[in-house]
Image 1 (cartoon, helix red, strand yellow):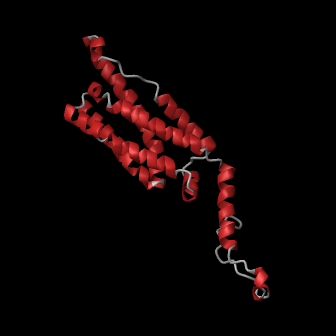
Image 2 (tube, rainbow, N blue to C red):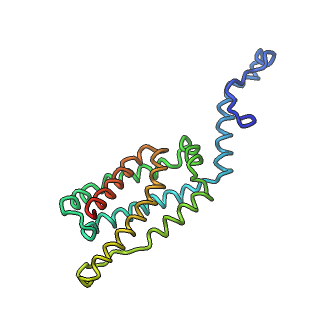
Image 3 (cartoon, one colour):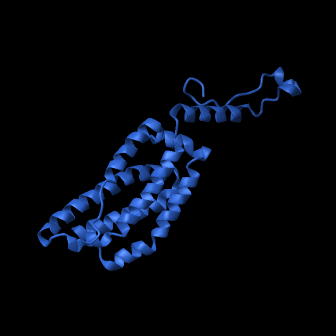
Length: 196
Protein backbone atom coordinates (compact mmCIF):
# COMPACT_ATOMS: atom_id res chain seq x y z
CA UNK A 1 0.00 0.00 0.00
CA UNK A 2 1.15 3.54 -0.72
CA UNK A 3 -0.86 6.56 0.42
CA UNK A 4 -3.91 4.31 0.97
CA UNK A 5 -3.71 2.73 -2.50
CA UNK A 6 -2.62 -0.79 -3.41
CA UNK A 7 0.62 -0.91 -5.38
CA UNK A 8 0.82 -3.76 -7.90
CA UNK A 9 3.28 -2.47 -10.48
CA UNK A 10 6.62 -2.59 -8.65
CA UNK A 11 9.50 -3.22 -11.08
CA UNK A 12 13.26 -3.56 -10.85
CA UNK A 13 15.55 -0.68 -11.72
CA UNK A 14 16.85 -1.31 -15.24
CA UNK A 15 20.42 -1.04 -14.00
CA UNK A 16 19.90 -3.29 -10.97
CA UNK A 17 18.05 -5.83 -13.11
CA UNK A 18 21.32 -6.71 -14.81
CA UNK A 19 22.85 -7.88 -11.54
CA UNK A 20 21.91 -11.31 -10.14
CA UNK A 21 22.22 -10.25 -6.50
CA UNK A 22 19.47 -7.65 -6.97
CA UNK A 23 16.65 -10.06 -7.78
CA UNK A 24 13.52 -8.62 -6.10
CA UNK A 25 10.81 -10.80 -7.67
CA UNK A 26 9.64 -11.71 -4.17
CA UNK A 27 9.18 -8.08 -3.08
CA UNK A 28 5.51 -7.39 -4.05
CA UNK A 29 4.26 -10.51 -2.23
CA UNK A 30 6.43 -9.81 0.79
CA UNK A 31 5.18 -6.21 1.01
CA UNK A 32 1.58 -7.41 0.76
CA UNK A 33 2.14 -9.95 3.55
CA UNK A 34 3.76 -7.35 5.83
CA UNK A 35 0.94 -4.84 5.14
CA UNK A 36 -1.70 -7.43 6.08
CA UNK A 37 0.13 -8.34 9.28
CA UNK A 38 0.42 -4.65 10.24
CA UNK A 39 -3.32 -4.18 9.61
CA UNK A 40 -4.21 -7.15 11.84
CA UNK A 41 -1.89 -5.96 14.63
CA UNK A 42 -3.26 -2.40 14.43
CA UNK A 43 -6.82 -3.63 14.81
CA UNK A 44 -5.99 -6.55 17.12
CA UNK A 45 -8.37 -9.31 16.17
CA UNK A 46 -8.94 -11.51 19.22
CA UNK A 47 -9.53 -14.86 17.55
CA UNK A 48 -9.94 -16.66 20.87
CA UNK A 49 -12.88 -14.44 21.86
CA UNK A 50 -14.54 -14.95 18.48
CA UNK A 51 -14.04 -18.72 18.74
CA UNK A 52 -15.51 -18.66 22.27
CA UNK A 53 -18.56 -16.79 20.99
CA UNK A 54 -19.04 -19.44 18.31
CA UNK A 55 -18.85 -22.12 21.00
CA UNK A 56 -21.41 -20.17 23.07
CA UNK A 57 -23.70 -20.03 20.04
CA UNK A 58 -23.68 -23.83 20.05
CA UNK A 59 -24.74 -23.87 23.71
CA UNK A 60 -27.53 -21.36 23.08
CA UNK A 61 -28.90 -23.12 20.00
CA UNK A 62 -28.85 -26.47 21.83
CA UNK A 63 -30.72 -24.87 24.74
CA UNK A 64 -33.39 -23.45 22.44
CA UNK A 65 -33.77 -26.65 20.37
CA UNK A 66 -34.08 -28.78 23.51
CA UNK A 67 -36.81 -26.49 24.84
CA UNK A 68 -38.89 -25.93 21.70
CA UNK A 69 -41.82 -27.66 23.43
CA UNK A 70 -42.06 -24.61 25.70
CA UNK A 71 -42.53 -22.47 22.58
CA UNK A 72 -45.45 -24.46 21.14
CA UNK A 73 -43.37 -25.90 18.28
CA UNK A 74 -44.94 -29.17 17.12
CA UNK A 75 -43.25 -32.46 18.04
CA UNK A 76 -42.23 -33.45 14.50
CA UNK A 77 -40.44 -30.14 14.02
CA UNK A 78 -38.80 -30.43 17.43
CA UNK A 79 -37.45 -33.88 16.57
CA UNK A 80 -36.23 -32.75 13.15
CA UNK A 81 -34.20 -29.95 14.76
CA UNK A 82 -32.78 -32.28 17.42
CA UNK A 83 -31.73 -34.87 14.85
CA UNK A 84 -30.02 -32.23 12.71
CA UNK A 85 -28.20 -30.28 15.43
CA UNK A 86 -25.01 -31.92 14.16
CA UNK A 87 -25.28 -29.75 11.01
CA UNK A 88 -25.13 -26.61 13.13
CA UNK A 89 -22.33 -27.99 15.31
CA UNK A 90 -20.18 -29.10 12.38
CA UNK A 91 -20.55 -25.73 10.65
CA UNK A 92 -19.52 -23.91 13.84
CA UNK A 93 -16.50 -26.18 14.34
CA UNK A 94 -15.33 -25.54 10.77
CA UNK A 95 -15.71 -21.81 11.31
CA UNK A 96 -13.69 -21.95 14.53
CA UNK A 97 -10.81 -23.64 12.70
CA UNK A 98 -10.87 -21.29 9.71
CA UNK A 99 -11.17 -18.01 11.63
CA UNK A 100 -7.39 -17.65 12.08
CA UNK A 101 -6.46 -18.17 8.42
CA UNK A 102 -4.69 -15.22 6.86
CA UNK A 103 -7.11 -14.90 3.93
CA UNK A 104 -10.00 -14.04 6.28
CA UNK A 105 -8.29 -11.34 8.36
CA UNK A 106 -9.12 -8.38 6.15
CA UNK A 107 -12.76 -9.50 6.03
CA UNK A 108 -12.85 -9.70 9.83
CA UNK A 109 -11.49 -6.15 10.04
CA UNK A 110 -13.97 -4.90 7.44
CA UNK A 111 -16.88 -6.42 9.39
CA UNK A 112 -15.81 -4.96 12.74
CA UNK A 113 -14.30 -8.03 14.41
CA UNK A 114 -11.33 -6.15 15.80
CA UNK A 115 -11.14 -5.90 19.56
CA UNK A 116 -13.03 -2.70 20.46
CA UNK A 117 -15.93 -3.20 18.04
CA UNK A 118 -16.29 -6.93 18.69
CA UNK A 119 -16.25 -6.26 22.42
CA UNK A 120 -19.34 -4.05 22.00
CA UNK A 121 -21.18 -6.73 20.01
CA UNK A 122 -20.12 -9.45 22.42
CA UNK A 123 -21.37 -7.45 25.43
CA UNK A 124 -24.81 -7.19 23.83
CA UNK A 125 -24.72 -10.89 23.03
CA UNK A 126 -23.79 -11.86 26.61
CA UNK A 127 -26.68 -9.76 27.94
CA UNK A 128 -29.09 -11.59 25.61
CA UNK A 129 -28.11 -14.94 27.16
CA UNK A 130 -29.42 -14.03 30.60
CA UNK A 131 -32.55 -16.18 30.65
CA UNK A 132 -33.51 -19.74 31.57
CA UNK A 133 -36.30 -22.08 30.64
CA UNK A 134 -38.25 -23.54 33.58
CA UNK A 135 -37.58 -27.18 34.38
CA UNK A 136 -41.26 -28.01 34.03
CA UNK A 137 -44.10 -26.00 32.53
CA UNK A 138 -46.45 -27.55 35.10
CA UNK A 139 -44.69 -25.47 37.75
CA UNK A 140 -46.27 -22.37 36.22
CA UNK A 141 -49.83 -21.56 37.28
CA UNK A 142 -52.32 -21.72 34.42
CA UNK A 143 -53.21 -18.01 34.57
CA UNK A 144 -49.51 -17.09 34.33
CA UNK A 145 -48.68 -19.32 31.35
CA UNK A 146 -49.69 -16.87 28.66
CA UNK A 147 -47.55 -14.12 30.22
CA UNK A 148 -44.68 -16.55 30.58
CA UNK A 149 -44.91 -17.49 26.87
CA UNK A 150 -44.72 -13.78 25.98
CA UNK A 151 -41.63 -13.32 28.10
CA UNK A 152 -39.76 -16.40 26.89
CA UNK A 153 -40.64 -15.59 23.28
CA UNK A 154 -39.04 -12.15 23.71
CA UNK A 155 -36.01 -13.59 25.53
CA UNK A 156 -35.33 -16.24 22.90
CA UNK A 157 -35.99 -13.77 20.09
CA UNK A 158 -33.50 -11.27 21.52
CA UNK A 159 -30.87 -13.99 21.93
CA UNK A 160 -31.31 -15.37 18.41
CA UNK A 161 -31.37 -11.86 16.96
CA UNK A 162 -27.95 -10.84 18.28
CA UNK A 163 -26.53 -14.24 17.30
CA UNK A 164 -27.80 -13.45 13.82
CA UNK A 165 -25.92 -10.13 13.76
CA UNK A 166 -22.59 -11.75 14.64
CA UNK A 167 -23.01 -15.09 12.86
CA UNK A 168 -24.45 -13.43 9.75
CA UNK A 169 -21.38 -11.22 9.42
CA UNK A 170 -19.01 -14.11 10.03
CA UNK A 171 -20.74 -16.34 7.48
CA UNK A 172 -20.38 -13.61 4.85
CA UNK A 173 -16.62 -13.88 5.43
CA UNK A 174 -16.32 -17.63 6.02
CA UNK A 175 -18.78 -19.57 3.88
CA UNK A 176 -18.43 -22.70 6.04
CA UNK A 177 -20.57 -20.90 8.66
CA UNK A 178 -23.45 -20.56 6.18
CA UNK A 179 -25.05 -23.84 7.28
CA UNK A 180 -25.06 -22.68 10.92
CA UNK A 181 -26.68 -19.38 9.93
CA UNK A 182 -29.37 -21.14 7.93
CA UNK A 183 -30.08 -23.62 10.74
CA UNK A 184 -30.50 -20.77 13.23
CA UNK A 185 -32.81 -18.89 10.85
CA UNK A 186 -35.06 -21.93 10.42
CA UNK A 187 -35.36 -22.19 14.22
CA UNK A 188 -36.50 -18.56 14.33
CA UNK A 189 -39.03 -19.26 11.59
CA UNK A 190 -40.40 -22.33 13.40
CA UNK A 191 -40.79 -20.37 16.66
CA UNK A 192 -42.44 -17.40 14.95
CA UNK A 193 -44.81 -19.71 13.05
CA UNK A 194 -45.75 -21.64 16.22
CA UNK A 195 -46.30 -18.45 18.19
CA UNK A 196 -48.37 -16.65 15.54
